[in-house]
Length: 346
Ligand SMILES: [Fe+2]
Image (cartoon, rainbow, N blue to C red):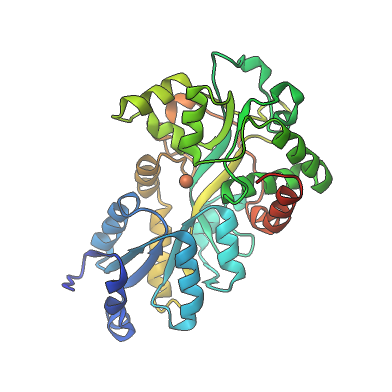
């Protein structure tokens, strides 16, 4: 592998391990990243860091659970200095499995709202997304919609589509409802919500948005970035989904907690040998310029104040966001999956 002092190398697939002979990596002060984000969604901003500080950054991208498993099995011998993944539930899992260390950064504490950081300092958010209601405006009057809780109302019988309970986005949404409404009320809510499904859980968020457009159901839940990016799609079929499906911000009324928020996030690994460089890189990723780029590239909301919303999300306007401390999503994850199991959310 050629290495200048200011470059980023993208290491994909099985061959990458060879590039991680620890003695070499350590000697050069390189930073090795395991990232569950697609390369194009993170690499340019890492390159900007690399060019500015003359530190080589090596990026390994892969499936979130696979990378977490790899970190765990590699243990202290892992070449990774940094772990990037999506969903607070998964970040919490990484912390619990002992693969992360505390960030110990004043910059992060000062700039990132407390609820978007692990309460024990093991990870910090890089971007926010919201999981909200999408509906067919031809069959649903906007005034009939209000809250997540209301999706259990019998008026929606046979009209809702959802992704399966195996998906962490839904687990985290339920975890947030447990935090807001308690275990018993959330169990009942799941039961009634499931009774309103048009068909058994299926697909990913984009499939669900398409199902609403196709008339399979009138309402679904999806993350904002899936919908936002359809607005810029070159595919007429996808653009049609964007045009024919509408976004509704739930739980916005006075006294309501706001729309459910989840994040992509980052932590320094327990095995990190370049902790100072890793910390500086994370501080770089939450600065104004990086946040603007990252939000735009990922169709997500920034985590710091004063950064414009990405162009794809701008049409949806401002919204009230649930300010729940995000590590609650991780803490409530097991109970959430148990409640979903017990109440028939397949
Ligand atoms: Fe996603």
